Length: 141
Image 1: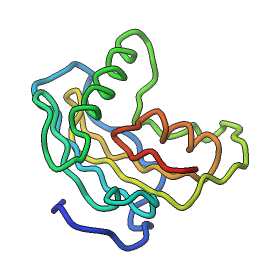
Image 2: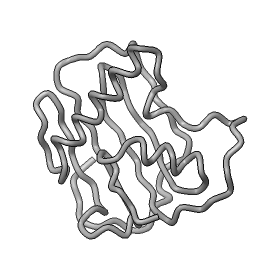
Image 3: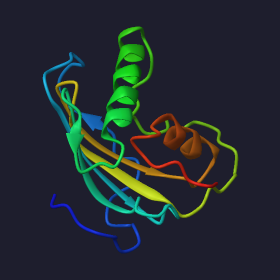
């Protein structure tokens, strides 16, 4: 996916896409493409490249984003949840709408493929988004 400036409103991907691929072992060099639309945050909308080990790419907060992913990866080893997994279909979520922001993260993390979509459509999705800040931008809602 090429890097771009601001994007048209989201809806070009299917929500609920999860993670596919082999085991969760850490490998050298995670590489993700983060696409954000309608965040309401100046400079946050667009498509950005994020690489970790070492941190870099065009992501505005690459170092902090990689630190967060490293923290989440450590929790997975201890039995925590996959940060890119969609909300389970049978989960009861509050009907709190968090705004129009949407995002998609694709690429490779910890040796496996990632293709995950994010929104702020309800309380579960808002919580999922916030768990990935600063990989995803902090929004006002």
